[in-house]
Length: 407
Ligand SMILES: [Zn+2]
Image (cartoon, rainbow, N blue to C red; front, top):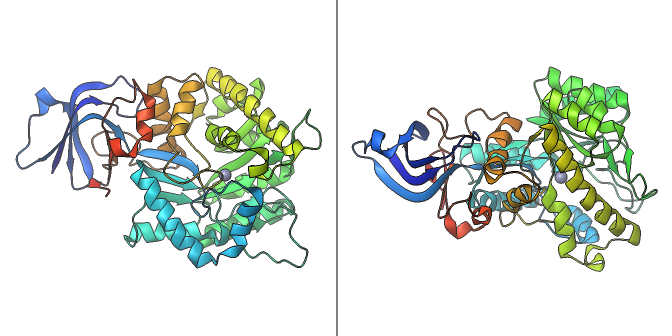
């Protein structure tokens, strides 16, 4: 039995923090939450003291298979330089780094060979340390779409880099294939960035019928659907079709924001990856003039979208795109700081990184500190409500998953 005694408890529900709080953990679960004065010290309890206790954090948008390398060509080369088993072993190291940073649950949104499904099973079996993982396997993409990009020599055959689907029946089949492989959820790519006309820098790539078929099939099989989006009417179409989470959404208009609020769709802005681009030069990124301009435009637009979504009352979750442009573990918590920069209170931003994230992952047992929940906890040497950046400092965090401290 463990007893956490903290100056402040942020339980993840968005409610006011509890001062001088005590949390009792027994057998990997939280059994009691209350004031120190009321709970006392249960016999035999191991005492852990700290400034603040928050739930284990959740990153709903990661790519554990990728290393975070920035240059576009190097990123592409990575996918073919490594055998998938090696990539999976490296992903295990990424998972460990993510967990050590306080993220006890993640959702993986596409990995070559669907290897994160296997990593999930390896973590669950106790072979390797890692956060709780929900994995989509391969993302579903139309031929030549966001996840089936052109530009390879035409003699190059890429195996299982993505699940290429065309037509409503093709997408139904793709959903079934990923479910057969073991996917927890389905990832689709409904609209993407486009540099052909920078006045409308996005383009729909799945037809309305394909979007509807993918959502319907996934839901029939009990899977949620996450969509890579950029802007335009396809987002609203997908939300109406029952899409569960909108990723990126650089250009979300007011009408779509209202629709998301009404339907209970979760927004995953991935602000960090947009900001991250500007840690590099155009040359370091391997970007063209047009694609660099797109990055500038989308960065601005994203903040405006976040503002609309916040005012409309849409649920927002923390997702970083770690693995794409971002190393695993070191930077995930910056997304929480960016939500605060975008107008959320620190308490709301912590909720986005805990309860809302857990809900987006369909993980009922985690995300809040309440009796009966699994003991995924982060003991913070500092107060994230006064300084949200403290969550970025691994040396100030003690991480517990299922009540066991992560080392
Ligand atoms: Zn992504």
